[in-house]
Image (cartoon, rainbow over all chains, first blue to last red; front, side, top):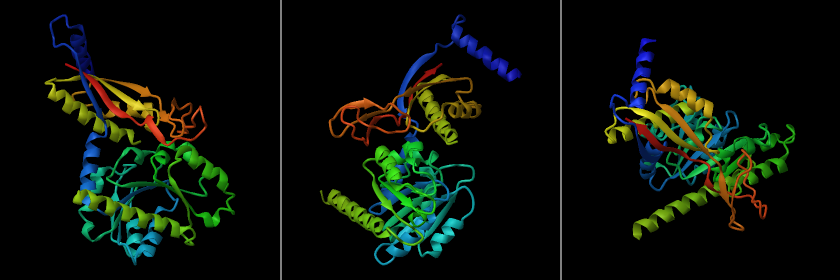
Length: 248
Length: 115
């Protein structure tokens, strides 16, 4: 209590200025609150080099890890994928991805509801990036908090599943607006749960009109081919873009 | 509750900027936050009250200007303010949904009042 009162006294003096105490002055800063994170993200980007890097976000339980397991398996013949997995607790997801055949690193965030560029930088120390073609960062399951943090990715992928309600993009606009691709997962059970496909696609188109949309079942494999082709094409695009920069 | 992380970054940035100016304390922090930045005002204030102790901003005010979301239509090139909080940017002139956001995602430390 005493501390609080003395703090107040200091304030009164500085505002009053009667006793000639230091004047309050205004300093223009105009810097993003993300300045530090964005700097580390830029370093991550340098470090990833020509590897295609994805940041996948969704609610908990929409099937990020299942999608990664199948993606890793189906790309195994042409592209080596490495996965960085963020979770509040446990390394269960990293183990699942490792079992699917990909190098994986788990980030346990504890109480933190999103990944930040620094967490990814530390995790990547434990990943042999040189031997990879694609790095997937599986964010903490959350459709709000991860939105603002650039991790050094090339592409942001936002996923929803058919059990979550067709208006999800309208409820979480920021994370859908930033998406290069939107994946609708679990289409194998769409009918059973009464999923209104047209309504969902309309919500996505309204919030993220430029995003490429994939409708998949990570469980049965339906629709996966288009998603994998898209990944292959983006990877080729990045390698070509970087080789031009180097030559030029 | 990512607002706590945002406030920690804000305090680091504010203290560094205040020190550069040779100030000894921060009296007020002025932010600009876009309508689609995903920041909850009450959560931001709550996190600030908790995090400011022991910093140069331990007795500072937090003042936030919320900026409306503005989009540009790719079809007819008109700029318009979004009339909803859902991020739906339908051009009022031609009805096309727009992906191009000109303003609305800002999280900016605009200025400080220091002494």
